[in-house]
Length: 121
Image 1: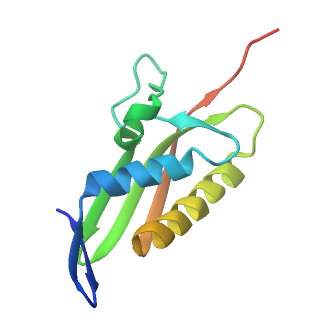
Image 2: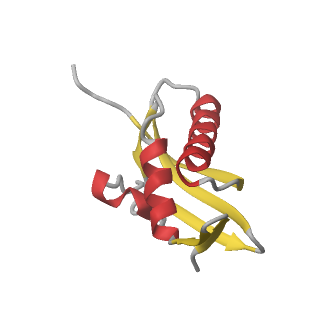
């Protein structure tokens, strides 16, 4: 169900997929975030890291009673403070959606699906 934006010139319908893509791209700009995770269940205890083309698959957009709610499934970098990364993702996504689409997001729920370590020696 598209999100409806009313302007003085008329009505604009924004598809949930568009909101999910913008939210995913905005989240990827946050330091400490490795990527978006698949919403599907974990496979053998590991979250599936999504490629840049599929960032929207880690985002769930719900439009209920003219309120937009988001669920973001993320993977963070080892050694970063998870609560800081999650808070920064929430702030960045909320700001970006407000600036680009004029949409006020009611809630942004963050689900940390995994921690990625770089084992380069």
